[in-house]
Length: 301
Ligand SMILES: C[S@@+](CC[C@H](N)C(=O)[O-])C[C@H]1O[C@@H](n2cnc3c(N)ncnc32)[C@H](O)[C@@H]1O
Image 1 (cartoon, protein in one colour):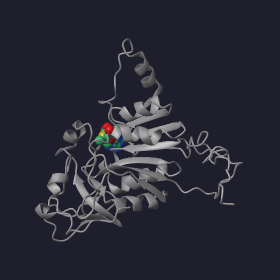
Image 2: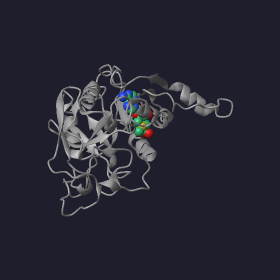
Image 3: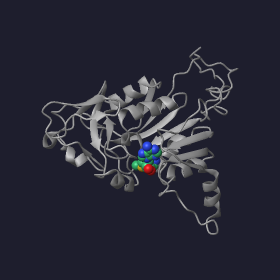
């Protein structure tokens, strides 16, 4: 993981980094989030003076999210994929085109794609292969080993910490691909977690519901620093987290998290990485195929 940059080295005004929501204003009191626990705000934080003390390196704008997603999926053996907060279904569609059997969940249906089957029959077939489910992810149940891969793309930073924890815990037997925004400074804390409390778009519930990419119901959400996100994943059953570099947008990148597995070592009689996960996630690393036959190298015994 990249070490957090020091205040001295990086002095980008926060306003430059905020794109889809605002941090709570300085006047806002520490906010109670449903469970009765309190989000603490660092003392003396002035909205105008927040500087980047954490966050990610500069993004590479030429790296498109769709290409990164496909690059990550391409070496994996297709199986069952759950796309949480699927929105207009681009990533579900992309996964389906790579052979995944996709379940796409979103609380809104306004962005679900419509395809004219008469002119785009291939696309329509692909779309029909996806199971679209309208549900709040906080209420959607996920069976243990029901999926081979779970994607949470562009959604985690629209949830509050307790809901983030519940959601990740629900996923915890399954490899997880997250694409999320990262806090550029430690302004707020929630228990051991650090980052920024964000006010979602819209003054009222009705206004917020109209913003197709925003949260559902919750007025605020929590954006973690990378260290905090890694800790959250670890706390929820994902000890191993890979971070994508460079980010594709400012303070926005992918994380691939792997659950703890019980058995150790590489046994040729074990058919799959996890029981109930199809034929194993790793297309290129199935037992028997992984290691090429040993060749003796001259001079090396
Ligand atoms: C920023 S969009 C991301 C869409 C897509 N995954 C992507 O990466 O382009 C966030 C999506 O999450 C959905 N969403 C927000 N809160 C949700 C919740 N509690 N349950 C289900 N979907 C939710 C929104 O409706 C929206 O479609």
